[in-house]
Amino acid sequence: MSKILGIFTCYNRKEKTIKCLNSLMHENTSIDFSFIAVDDNSTDGTRDALLSYNNVQLVSGNGHCYYSGGMRLGIQEAKRSCDMYDWILLFNDDVTFFPHAIEKLKTYSLKKNEIIVGATCDRDKRLSYGGVIKKALFKPTFEIIMSQNSRCFCDTFNANCVLLPTNIFKALPNIDNHYTHAMGDYDYGLEARKRNFPIVVSDFFVGICID
Image (tube, rainbow, N blue to C red; front, side, top):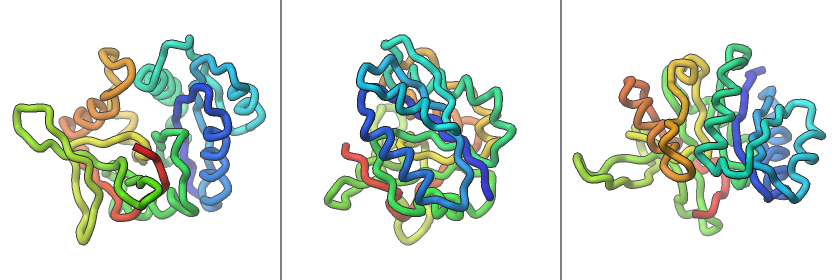
């Protein structure tokens, strides 16, 4: 049974957070999940709901972490225990994961030396998040893609669902302090490519996440 450590940040969307966690744990029965959840001072009972799980380690934010700040705290905490796991999963708690999505994503890796991005769709089955390629050499122009007839390699990613082998996760730095909310995941992926770690995006949707 593979051991995966999931890292996510959350704030005041308890029902979505719990639905997301349950879909991961109940629909991927060959995976032993643990989670680091960064709760950014929620007021809707999210914290108490997360404390009811014995496989969730709760990290408290100050209410001003936002996405990049929250993930930075989670990654920092995960660095202390990641050797216990085969994979590290970065994900958003507003993804409604399809059954067996992470099991399928894990087998999409041809060899355990690449980062695997799970593409997500909207309710009309249109691509919403996934791998990202640079469209211009000098201008910050990007395009979100997924694999089609062949495996597509990317320049970076949306971190709505990203599976990293533990050895790659350990080798990467944390999300840069420059980023508070948006673009921290783009920069994290660009840093991975700078260090010559391949990034491949799935040819199937792992779940629904509205753009």
